[in-house]
Length: 79
Image (cartoon, rainbow, N blue to C red; front, side, top):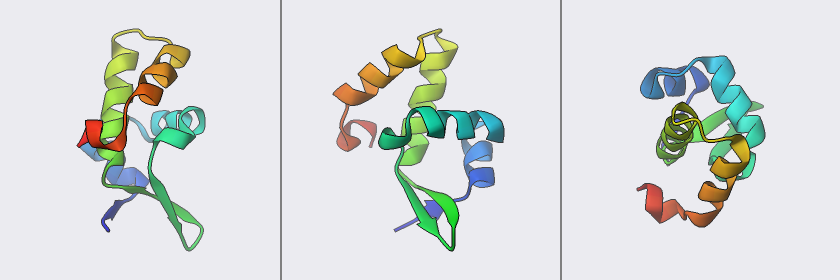
């Protein structure tokens, strides 16, 4: 299993770290993470999920709409 750090995720999806933390708080159940040594890492599938969230925010969807869209998707939809 591959994981990516918060800083790495920030670079990959080109979003500030503080935004990713906000999204993690709001969409926690949809973003695959793994905790190791009390540090949160993102599973590789999280790249697609966070990219989707970022795109929807840029398209001016509100957080509840994005949560609804995520609820309709499965992990396989992001791969």
